[in-house]
Amino acid sequence: MKIVKITLATILTATALFAGTYNVDASHSNVGFKVKHLMISNATGKFDKFTGSFEFDEKSNTLKSLNGVAEVASINTENEKRDGHLKSADFFDVANYPKITFMLNKIDGDTAYGKLTMKGITKNIELDLENNGSIIDPWGNKRVGLELNGKINRKDFGLNWNKALEAGGVVVGETVKLNIGLEGILAK
Image 1 (tube, rainbow, N blue to C red):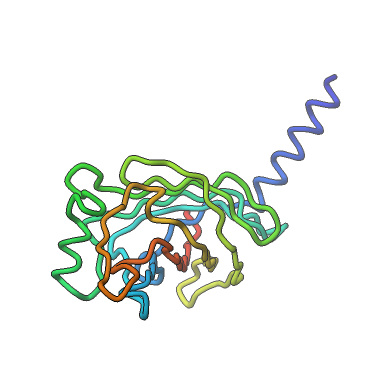
Image 2: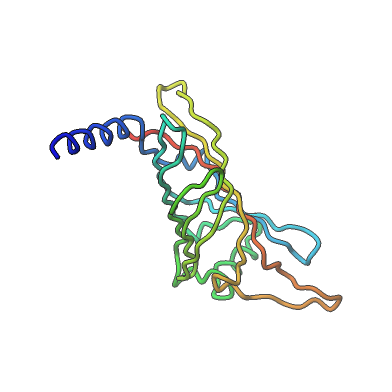
């Protein structure tokens, strides 16, 4: 029994040597989205304020954990009137639900599975994961780049506002495409 405990401790210690916690560098990362507008074009946007961290295993070159928070009040579609509408109770209701959160559950190949919470509603989602590798920057910091892409239905999260168009269709599409690019710096 003692040998089993020593072996297990050795394996856990060796794994910890290769895994590191990375803090998201918001100035070199992006939490973006796009959604159909009037059924013919895309409205794009991002959240200017967000935080996050992830654990990355250097030996297996795999993501082990990821947690992130976006500040809804920082939504930016480069249209002040639209941003105000998105912050209102018609959409995100920022006064009552100021944050969007994501927590990774597991990785299977190039697919990341996690829980996304918006407007008080939590749903399991799938995202395509692209590992962009790691590098030592000019200042000696270890960095890892990741990209996550996927689709969600905004109505699943209580973002239901819409208007029918006379010619058919609606003002805002239901499918929201997510594009999240993360650059993390190894925590010291």
